[in-house]
Length: 317
Image 1 (cartoon, rainbow, N blue to C red):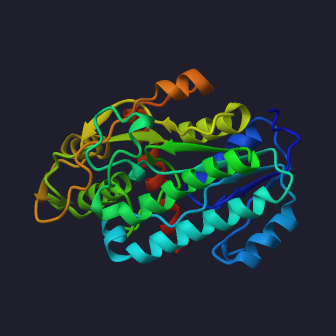
Image 2 (image 1 turned 120 degrees about the horizontal axis):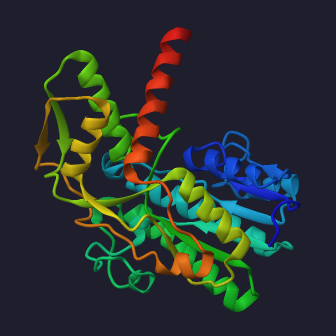
């Protein structure tokens, strides 16, 4: 599919991932892009779903809108995370299947995988167990959208596809310590500790859990490729294929920030899923997608963006 002359609705276009997907689409020449904010169209409301589709009249929908957060936010708001993510997706998919749509791209979550999925995670293992408890409501809500897309493909020939990005990071990430994921939280803690002359940084968990990370601009490219090329209703992992422990990640971030203190891990707090690392062979075979940004390159860019944002905030104040 040539996206350049298509009318494309990007839900969540003002968010972290959405900003980068919009930039990716503009870079290839797309001009008919629609990225409303939740204040304008709350997709948990069926009337708002109808109105946003009437306003944008899309050929393609890329559904990024989500209520997300780290382990702490998932523990505090499991009901909100389940309801909002489920209702946004279910209503939007159903409304879109009633229209003449060329492609619906749904972005899922790595949290949908079972807690003890064999590493590397293969798409075929997605239904082989219950997700890790701290983020299960969010993961299950997003996984049900895959079931809906596949059911709608079977019954209505609805052109929906589904991609599963691993943990994302990069410029415009959420650095609020109450709701952020691990990389922005560690960057902020290290920058503030260095600036304040602190010798210790607290970290949740044992540090032994592992994660895979994908730079957000790479993820945006993968999503664009899915809109262009993906026809199968089977899910597709988007990742870098490299795994790192939280302890080693913290040390790597400290080195790039220049923080020379130590990390104090708190084993009374949850690690989350024990390991995360994806099999990305399907993305390479079906989309021609491979990550091109190394973790070190991505961390340097993210830290530089965060420090620039802090500096601009101080100037504005």
